[in-house]
Length: 95
Image (tube, rainbow, N blue to C red; front, side, top):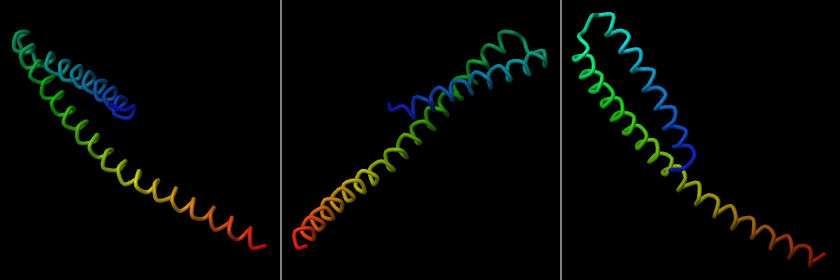
């Protein structure tokens, strides 16, 4: 994983923690029994994690899709730069 996806994973982990605390606080105020709260909390965390993993994978693929054309553009730019330098050298020799 590259740095962008590592940062994304950190943000998603923090969001998961905040969502879980909010949900557990709300559920505790509803007088849900502790056992049910733990079971539902586990399901909640699993669902959040699955969604964030899916989101991370989609964003990683999107980054790869962007990086590939970018790499081709860089190669083309390098080629054009070399041609320009060659033309400048030829023009310099003619003077």
